[in-house]
Length: 195
Length: 152
Image (tube, rainbow over the protein chains, first blue to last red):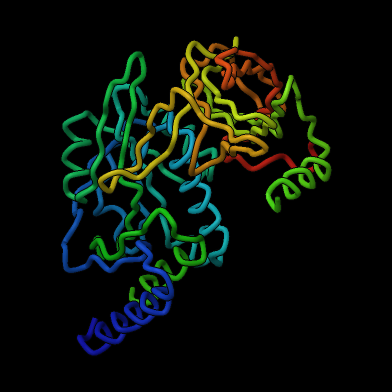
């Protein structure tokens, strides 16, 4: 893409992000391009097939992490993302892929992860890997999580953030927990316009 | 006061049965549904009491263990903190809703389908240290938490 066009697209994205920044400080929609996050996936889908970032070139990705026993944060986030996808036009949605990976693969089987995310939208892809793979991917995205044990319970705490990855595989936006479906759509549309 | 009226109006509008025992009323209890193989989920409701009290225990045949949790952001991470006693102020209420408090149901024993009713026995301890229990029938919703349209 010519440098002139790319700069204009980036300014458009910055403008869209700034427009949403008022009034209270919001953690949603932060431009993280300069942090060079991610760049790694290599997690398995429910069929066992390894999915890599490269195969999604040309699509804008929405990537989230969580666990299926999460009664609150994860379902709320997935519901908002599902609503965001519903707001997209059909031709836009065809160029977007939602990915959700478990940070608790010892208790979340690949099949369970698939059923869980597909309950929010059958096109969402649920991913899982070994603990080492999970750590590698979350570290690449600077996504923090912690598994602790309290009496007989296994508690998982985790960052509420999600990521928007552009059609070239670069991580561009970090989405906060308070992001509305409309804000997510704006971020996605800005990146779709670049491609 | 606004909140009380809001809850009363909501209860009336949706014709959701409220269970009352002594001075405690439980409104609109619901359980987030699950997909096959999912071992835990959360229950939500509004608890209202004329006297100051605290929710100190929950049990149900539907799960091995139940515990009140609070969703809270700590050190940049969302975490669930166990709450051993959830206070309900005198002439007040506490909402267990997504983003705040919930009852965690762990080790689900039976499949939960939207529309099913799950019995939850809530134990309260009053200022006099006496414990009373109330059992409510919580309605299972879809895993997304969206109530079924037209459902009571």
